[in-house]
Length: 183
Ligand code: PRP
Image (cartoon, rainbow, N blue to C red):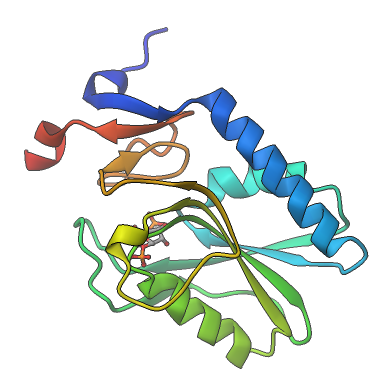
């Protein structure tokens, strides 16, 4: 069956195969770092849900998973700078090695806020893992410990990333046609 989202995509930036290979590399690297350390993978919803599910399966250590849902973009393309917790973590993270999993690090507002928040909640160490890093847009002094791909300042969707809540289920990462978000 033809994918009805494809007509809105200008070009594929990272194919399913490229993503799979890179996620496996990241999983292996995290496995080396966290073997025997019982890390907590903490996914930032909604964008991270696809990456998170692949990453935890690519990382061969005993770990557990948790989620937090935040929002700072509303339906727009510019971060408001105000990070709102939509759904909070449901467990005590005191003393835990927390691996924060993001789909994209853009202005840095979200991760700067969350890093502080998880430290306040008692995490002993925070490791930031993002699939995509867009350093050209950074407003906060924050860097990822692991970044899958460094991306140019283009409107990317797929593999969890949305535009107006759509396209998250594209299996690859693509650039959206400008006419789609100009509508
Ligand atoms: C996106 C993305 C990150 C954040 C990154 O979330 O998933 O959480 O923006 O941008 P920043 O570095 O400029 O803060 P969004 O608020 O769009 O919500 P979503 O995850 O539900 O798509």
